[in-house]
Every structure is written in structure tokens, then in C-alpha cells.
Length: 280
Ligand SMILES: NC(=O)c1ccc[n+]([C@@H]2O[C@H](COP(=O)([O-])OP(=O)(O)OC[C@H]3O[C@@H](n4cnc5c(N)ncnc54)[C@H](O)[C@@H]3O)[C@@H](O)[C@H]2O)c1
Image: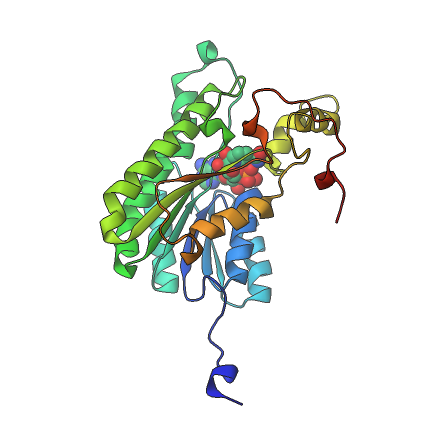
């Protein structure tokens, strides 16, 4: 057998890379952490809910020993973000990829918002990205190939009813993405944004569960979607992976909308059934 065939070096698109993923205790972040580990990366799962993070890390480590580390962190705190990045580098020895995925929504009317509510959503959804970049940059620069992936939304492009601060933050993320891309290209950092549509995660169900019939409420929303289906967290995670490796070489400062066609039409009534609704 050749020397190469017996090598135990990790394989995959992220072999040898280290990723810091915020909001990795559920939904899209959790799916990204799983996928990144499968692709050979070592991953810091960063989130407020440490027990949940540890359970997910244990599951990942069962399949890929030593690949996952859970870190408790409120991303709206600069100190906490700085600590989590330092802990990631201490454990894994480097940092190549930052996925700014943590996010929150507050539903309400702008004239009734308090300053504290405004600051909280801004802090979690946008300021956290500034903190993560600031403290990750020295490590990203050291690798000479750094990847920053910010999670926006279809609300990065259009308004969404009764979520004025969320919509503001998601628009702001596009500006921050372009600024980082521009100012840090020379240092070897690429920065891009993934903008998901309706994705079946706890965040979505939190909204739908306040409706009398959550499933019917989702079906009603999906009638506005040309493909007639929602996204899975894994669908979005694959787009995050694309921006986190050389599959997207040459791409920076851009966004990828992944929304089953939602934003392609000003108005749409899905006649259904669509080919995408039938299981393959
Ligand atoms: N689900 C959708 O339909 C959808 C659509 C567009 C964009 N998004 C975006 O996707 C991202 C992930 O959301 P999701 O849908 O997976 O929902 P989710 O609720 O499963 O994930 C959000 C994660 O962020 C974490 N988080 C919230 N506040 C935090 C804080 N202060 N510090 C650390 N972590 C914090 C939560 O604990 C959670 O793990 C968010 O940025 C969201 O805006 C989701």
C-alpha cells in the first residue's frame, strides 16, 4: 500500500482548518458545525446555551474525535467574544474561518420599541460581527487565507412586517460585509454574506407557534415561494461552506440569496404541487 493511502491526515474541503461559529447551538449554526466537522475542520461552537453546545460537541466528537469544542458566549459582549476566540486558538492552535450566524428577532412596532430593545437586537445581530472580526483578524491574517461568512437574510433586501430592527440589522450586515471585503482583501481575508429565506429552525417555529395553527401558517407563507418549499438548516450550511473554502476562490464582498425563489417575484401565488414538494 502506498504511503499516501495509509495516511491518517484529515480529508475534506476544510481539512486542517479551524472555524469559530456563533449561534451553533441550534438551527443553521448547528448544521454548519456538523458539516464543517465532516469536511475535516475543527470547530468552536459558540453560543449562550453552553449545555446545549456541549451536547452537540459530544455528538460531533463521537464521529470525528477532537473536532468540536463548545464555548459559552453572549456575542453582544466584546469581552465574551474576545475570550471565545482566544479559547478557540488556544485549543486548536489557529483560526481560519469566522461564521457570524447568531441572531435574534424582536417583533413589534417601531414607535413602541424601547432604546434597550433596539440596542439588544443591534448588539446581537451586528455589533457582534464587529467584535468577532476585530478579535479574529490577527489570527486570520496569520493564516494568509481567512474566511468571514456573515448570515444575513432575505430581510437584507426587503422589509418584513413588524420587525424593524431585525430588518435594519440584516441590511447593515451587507454594508459591513462589503467594508470588510474591501479593507482586508490585501491581508488575504475574504468576506461574504449568506442570505436565507424561510428556513425550518427554532427561530422560525418561535414565530409560527404563536399562530393558532403553526403548520397552516407555514403553508400560507410557502404559497408565496415559487419552489413551494422551505429550506433546511443543512441547505443553508452548504452555502456557508461554499464561502468558507476555495470553492468560492475569487469571491468577496458579495451575498448569496438562498430562498427557493422568494425574492424573484413581487407577487406570487404558488399553484402547487411543485416538483420540489415531491420527495425524491
Ligand atoms: N430561520 C430562518 O427562516 C432564517 C431566515 C433568514 C435568516 N436567518 C438567520 O439565520 C441565523 C441563524 O438563525 P436560525 O434560523 O438558525 O435560528 P436559531 O434560533 O436556531 O439560531 C439562532 C442562534 O443564535 C443564538 N443566539 C441568539 N442570541 C445570542 C447571543 N446573544 N449570543 C450568542 N448566541 C446567540 C441562539 O442561541 C441560537 O443558537 C440568524 O442570524 C437568523 O437571523 C434565519
